[in-house]
Image (cartoon, rainbow, N blue to C red; front, side):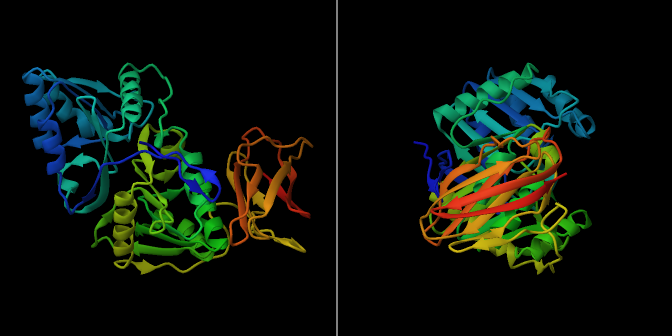
Length: 419
């Protein structure tokens, strides 16, 4: 059954997972075997398909009466990357659909006989298999399978219908809040691997986690594209490890929150970029399955040892402005951005009495109270830490806003700028 474990007082929906596959260690024989075992149907969506073995299996299955429906990305470089596979598959009775050219379809998943889903971070490109760090999981939950099948059918028909939700499935567009929630509610450790770092909300959440005492480790392949963001994270107290190009390439997209103490793990196709989280078609999931949390934690820590550290710079992620602090007896703000842009996510953390009942209100520049999800009541941890993460509406008027936090009888207000 699916679960919704309590993480620092919040309920995070999760999906059950029966297996995790680690690449490049395992190889892609698991995918070959899964496809070969199909009896009635194969449905999938892939960013890239350049694996002759997979293509041959799909063709053979379709030639022998299995219903094979595949959605392939067309946007960005999709046409040039996938045309050869499309031509071959169509000649063997495979129903191939080009995804809409105006949206990148970056998801990587296959559903076999509508009874088991393989959801991953890796592309089906054989030449990459031996050199990239990726993960796949196996999901047999009926609710998840129905949601995935509903979505792939709608995507195949280009209906524009939003993805179908279920348990811990994480779909893009619109996945930012789910990933920020996992980060924001970690209390001991955060282990992160990703290919990209170009999203204000994610960077802010990681910085805030480090400032409230969470041990945050981010592992990536070295690239000048993310130097400023990673330096800012290091300046906020995040342990950043970057691998050289000669090492394994970090293509995985994972977050492991409080792993080793229960915790939850996210993995999927979502890169930490605004395009990936808010525009692309992506699929991942959040799970509390111990086999996933323990495996991901072990692999990320092992990869971190291969990298070198990044020195820190001032600032907090991609936001302008630093943190704002304030204190009264029994209550102190420990992390808060003094300036934030419209459409971004903000996080405020305080230290107060253990298990205190706390409330946060935000008065916008217009004078109205913000109704953003994430504000309101929460309970401090046993260590006396409480935090909130909420979105600044894209249509919010710029100007000075006020955050007012109250824990028990202690009350504190702090101004901040919305730009």
